[in-house]
Length: 372
Image 1 (cartoon, one colour):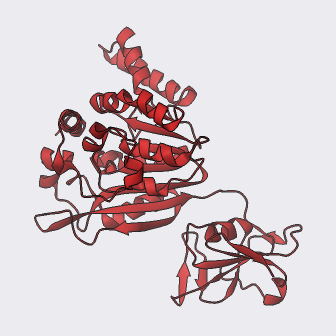
Image 2: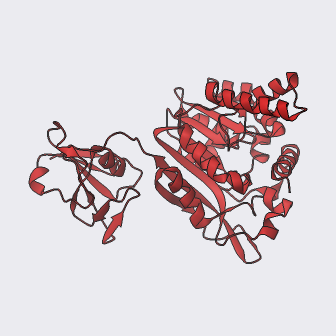
Image 3: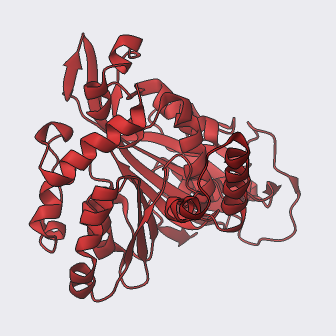
C-alpha cells in the first residue's frame, strides 16, 4: 500500500466535502472559533485541541495543519509578538487554509500565520522549492536521482524549511498516525530538532492499547482514517523519551475509545513534553523537595526524589522541575547567595542539609516564589 498516496487522496476529498468519520468529538474554545470561516471549521479534522497549550508570544509550529483551524485559533492566542507556522503536504488543504489568510489577517490585526508545504517527518526539506527545482531538472536516470539527493541535502543544510531551534511550541492534531511506521521516529526527532531549548510540545493523536496487526495496517481506509497507523500507547511515550524529551506526559486521555477494531481500542490522547535547556550541570547549592503523594519518584535523567527530602540538584534541573512541566509536584530552593559552583552536579541521591538552604529562595511548581 502507498501510504502517502492514500492519505493525500483521503484528505483531498476532505477538503472538497466534509468527512465526518475523520474526526472525534472535540470541545473547542467557542470564543476562538467565532473569527473563523465556517468552511475551515467544517473541513478541518482532528481528535484533540492542542491550541489550549499556546502562550502569548509563542512561535508555534502546527504539523499537518490541514484547513488551518488550529493555526488560526493559535494566532489569536500568540498575540501581536507571536507567529504561527502550518506545515502540510496536501495541496488542496493548503489552498483551503491560504484562501482565508487575507480575511484572517484583517480580523487579527496582522498576518501572523503562514502555511508551508513539507513532510512533517522531514521538516528541513522545502517541497515547494523542490518542485520548482524538478520543473527545470526532472529526474529520468539514476544519475539524475543522485543529483537530486545532493540538492536535497544541500537544501536541508543551507535553506531548511524549519530551522534548528526556531520554535517555542510544536502542536499537532491527529496527524502523526498518518506517517509511515518506518518514518515515525525520524518525525519525533525532527520535532526535537526544530524546538528551542526549553520548547514544548502538545501532540493530540490516536493511540491504541495493543499493537496493530499487519493485515489492519494494509487496510488503506483504516490507515487514512487515522486508525491502523496509530502508535501503541506505551510506544508513543517512549518515542519521545528516546528523542531526548523530558517530562513526557499523557496530559489528556479519553476514557472511552473512539473506535474498537478487532478488539483493539483506539482512543484520543494528548501528549506533552519539553526539550531540556542543556548547559552544564554545576552545583551552586540548589535543592528540590518532592511534595508527594508517592513515596518517591524518578525523573528521566536518573534522579530519585524521596518524598519530603531536600535533594541536591544543579540549577538546570531545579529550573526544569519547578518551571511548570512537572506541575506543582516540586518545591525548588535556590541558594541565598549564588557564588562559584562547588563542583560538578552532585551525584543523584545526594541530600542537601537544611543548614545549606537557609535564607534561600523558594519556588513552587506553579511559578510562584517567595524569599524566606
